[in-house]
Image (cartoon, rainbow, N blue to C red; front, side, top):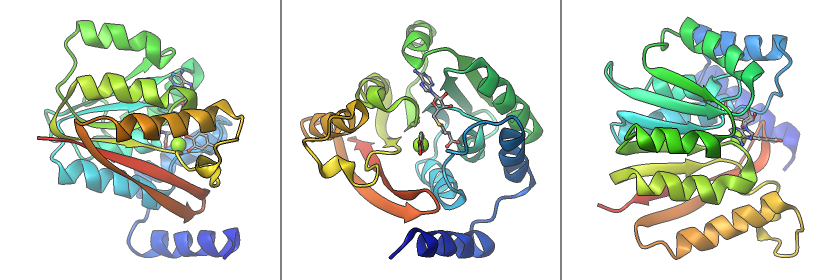
Length: 222
Ligand code: SAH
Ligand code: DHB
Ligand code: MG
């Protein structure tokens, strides 16, 4: 099996059941035009996020890592009219691109993008009493995945779902000797989840246009 095959299958899935509509295509185009890195979730993965958020009836969503707003749009579309999504993004430039795409998608009222290192935005959110959270998508700086998980878990309602992206990274997750801090953080994240009685979790490996990677899904116990 090769990257070529994985991408061809993703293409087929996109052509059949998970196409980008106008607003999603426009978000990808705007990100490309502004020279953002093309590291957003793939269309089938974005659709998965949308389906998961709808499945649990999410009304309050927290996202770590906005980039150009592609996953943000897929998640915000799962919200009811009075739902709310806060997305945390380090880069002011990316935030500007994302806000325009979110607005174009008609989701400006439901979505707030906060600029700065996510760890520095969290105290403000806590002070405002953000939550209880129904759905969290962790997709920012990978070394902080365990920290974002801990924060989100404390503010999640029973039945909430926490999803983390890029936990497998070409299989590096299985290599205990990998010195990369991002890999170490994903391994530590798994150990932390394993010892956390408040969640029931799994990790699903994925292949597709983004190569070999994976998501962790953690359901907060009722
Ligand atoms: N969720 C997006 C992709 C996010 S890519 C999508 O699928 O469409 C990862 C993002 O995390 C980048 O935009 C990067 O700027 C941001 N990021 C990196 N470090 C961060 C930090 N400390 N706090 C918040 N965002 C961060
Ligand atoms: C990369 C991919 C991602 O999904 C992400 O969130 C950050 C970086 C990458 O391929 O480098
Ligand atoms: Mg990612």
